Amino acid sequence: MPSSEGDDERMTSDSTKDHLWWQSGVVYQIYPRSFQDTTGDGVGDLEGIRSRLDHLEWLGVDAVWISPVYPSPMADFGYDVADYTGIDPLFGTLEDLDRLVEEAHDRGLKVIMDLVPNHSSSEHPWFKESRSSRDSPKRDWYIWEDPGPDGEPPNNWLSVFGGPAWEWDEKTEQYYYHAFLVEQPDLNWRNPEVQEAMLDVIRFWLDRGVDGFRVDVMWHMIKDDQLRDNPPNPDYSDDQTPYNKLLPVYSTDQPEVHDIVAMMRDVVDEYDERLLIGEIYLPIGKLVAYYGEDGSGAHLPFNFQLVELPWDSGEIYAAVTEYEAALPPGGWPNWVLGNHDKSRIASRVGPAQARVSAVLLLTLRGTPTLYFGDEIGMPDGDVPEDQIQDPQALNLDDPSFSRDPQRTPMRWDDSEHAGFTTGEPWLPVGGDAGVTVEAQRDDPDSMLALHRRLLDLRRREPALQIGDYAPAGIEGDAFAFIREHEGRRFLTALNLGDAPVTLEPDRPVRGTVQVGTDRPREGDEVRGKIDLAADEGIVILLEE
Ligand code: GLC
Image 1 (cartoon, rainbow, N blue to C red):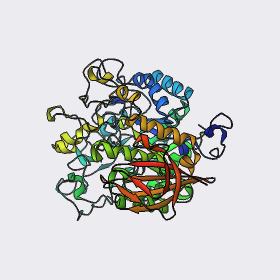
Image 2 (cartoon, protein in one colour):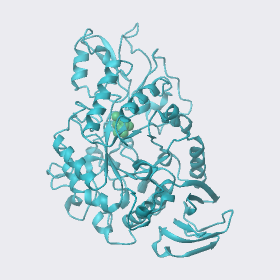
Image 3 (cartoon, rainbow, N blue to C red):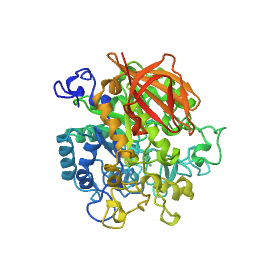
Image 4 (cartoon, protein in one colour):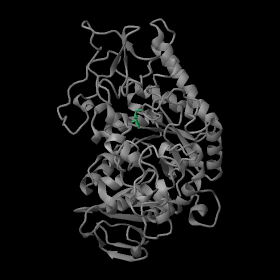
């Protein structure tokens, strides 16, 4: 990260020094099952991540967020945690984690763990104890309720993965609540003992040198204390999962959740420059509340607008403005294009627009999170129906809800299984020609090279890391915005359509293209209007 001296712009500028690493940096999400296997069991591991630190350093990202690697029965591939302070043998050992953190740090990379505090695995000793009897000292660590008069569940709440969110326990004759799988009982965050236990988990990892957390389903952590029924969703349509039949107004986003987030933040703040990210799928107005009062909440409530919105210039341009305006004082923005739960960007918008999306993600104001494989334009993988692994699709008995396609293994080279494993990969490795790190590494026109140039420019230019944002005009499928810091100004112009567009910003443009989706354009001067080819995105350094 920028320091006081050095031989390039970034190093000589001290204008980013008032910013924290996670404000000027770029996060890269690793789905560990699918990044790199070193044992031949077909599942990625921590040593695999360590062996690929070269790639991450060369690419130019600043931090990795690793999806859960804790001991788990893997009912939801690690999002069902059976021990919050261990490492599943499938991924390695605690020592492997320590080594990974140390080597990452040696290279200037931060390591962010996934934290899954809303629910544990039903195999967690806490839950086993809790379900053992109504008198268990841990009974109240989970959400247990008596049946209704006819034996029915306490209310109408639905599980995100299908069916009711309440599971009957024969032995103790009560229901327990699970927002996700039956194997993922929700912890009772109103219980101070639960709070203390999980805050200790946070301390455990921070003491080991981990740089922060991405907190799973943060907005789910507190539920209505009266357990009121959720109302029907008038906008429900058949292409949504049945969970969406109701509006989760009482099962999620309760006001008291902010007290819990503040407790987590307090612990994180006991340490230097650690980061708290929240996974929150809510409309902007509600999302920004997770920054907390006076910044007492998450540093970065994940902003999923680029994942959720249609790929439309008007919608995106307006959403950026809305988001910028909604941020509380001191609230740092962030942007996400993809993750392990959503169809990959290259499949959602196609390969040409995926390049445009990279220019957008890496030049908007705020911390970008890049999903592994998106840097080479990996599309969703093809997973035959009889090989589906994702519990969401299996539970709903509907392949269209499978998250497997976005979780297929990283494609490193053209060898069998793309260099991911020497064994049988847990999900099929796609075969798309040219979509490997090796094929793109030395090709200056590749998606990978485009990412490197964008990351390099961003790293050298405080205006792109921490500069202000201003909209600069929209015309049909194209729009532009300006980033500025201490008089240095960059204009990003993007054509989200497949026909050429000419943008006429309010003020005539004078500048030089620094990075573009079409590399030969780099170095070109732009005067007055901006002509964009189909599917083109450029970053212009403005004169003056
Ligand atoms: C989050 C995770 C997702 C998981 C769910 C339940 O949304 O990203 O993968 O299935 O929480 O933990």
